[in-house]
Length: 97
Image: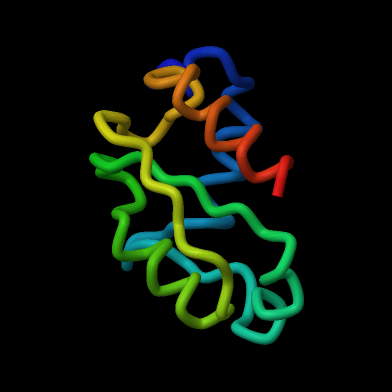
């Protein structure tokens, strides 16, 4: 909600069109494209994301063979708004590896 409120309406409409449709979420990257990013990819997800459920990112990670998904407890679709301190910790840990 807060991310959408802070964003340009036309930009949000384009993003929704690219990533989701009437039948649900669309995969934008192929398994091969995801796999090419795997060793430098940090996937962070909100535990309670209702827009793109945790199962979606876990499936993408399994296809890509990437590191484990970092789930932010208590966050929904926007961990950057809902749990910014925890998100910062996850990013700092990733960058220090």
